[in-house]
Amino acid sequence: ELKVEQNPLFLSMQEGKNYTIYCNYSTTSDRLYWYRQDPGKSLESLFVLLSNGAVKQEGRLMASLDTKARLSTLHITAAVHDLSATYFCAAKYGSGNTGKLIFGQGTTLQVKP
Amino acid sequence: DADVTQTPRNRITKTGKRIMLECSQTKGHDRMYWYRQDPGLGLQLIYYSFDVKDINKGEISDGYSVSRQAQAKFSLSLESAIPNQTALYFCATSDGTSSNEQFFGPGTRLTVL
Image 1 (cartoon, each protein chain N blue to C red):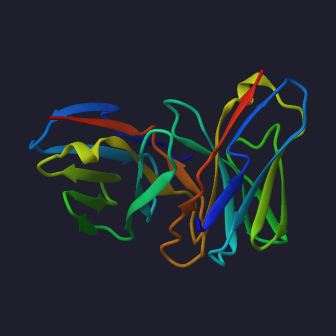
Image 2: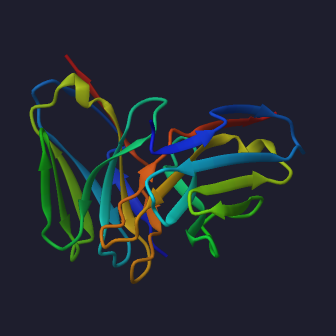
């Protein structure tokens, strides 16, 4: 059974600092997704990682995938207040194009001025 | 207009009542999903459907049922609501391509008293 764990679960950081959120998953998966959720809002897709070694960047966020280590990271560069939100990773469960996702618990990021 | 809509957005009901949550999409996607979100637990898959004739149970289907009335509509029912079904419910869609990126609706906040 696939389990997905994120750490840390809560992160308070100063503006301008760098940090990384880690997403570990327990069994083989070849798709990894990152989502952002603002308080009281829906989930917004950030990145879709489709292969080992995949790296994607958008603004101050960069996501990577290491399928051998069963690890994805979301790196934040020079954080700004607007990045404050909860970030979820999700791994695809099962072989083939199943579409079933298992989500991590979420990491709540608070960026302080 | 939003691509994925959910009704109602908020609902308060009593134990034992039957409740239906509705989801509609204009994205033209074949695949639709229902998730529930509880604080600290991320999202859990309740049911998913890959087309009108295909319905599958997710991780936590007990106490729930679904109906796929058309490609664009997917409803979730709680036959006899109980307090521990109080949660935020999200509908999502995907197109079934290799990325299978899922797009989420705005959510329905359900409270069962």
